[in-house]
Amino acid sequence: MNTLLTGLVVWSLLAHAEAPMIDSKGPACTSIIPAAVGGPMPPDSVATVRWFGTTNFELAYRDQVIPLDTCYDRGPRFRPIGFTVDQVKRADAILIGHGHWDHMSDVARE
Image (cartoon, rainbow, N blue to C red; front, side):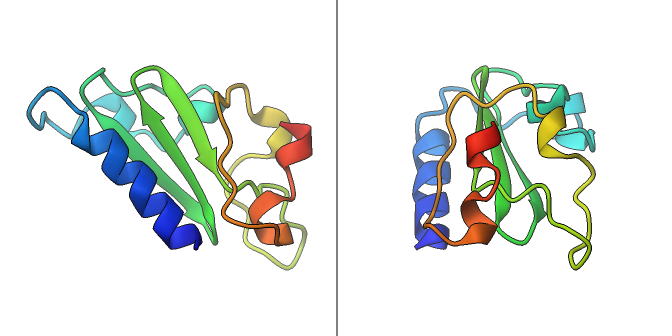
């Protein structure tokens, strides 16, 4: 279900792009800092998808930041993703694949 939802959202965003593919070496495509925590946003005609590990993704498109599933504070058993939920500055919408802890554990705090 989560993969299907992610695929549909990505397809929808890309299907409505009005400009041809542009250089993918811009700051939004090369930065390791997610847009949700203050990293660069892509130009209007570009959608970026970042994978944070496990089930976490971030879509950034046309001045919108959309986290897909939110399990940022992972605890000692999991590898850190480079930021915590307290560092998230922006989430225009949050899409959750289903109700397991590793898909929605940080939604209430965002």
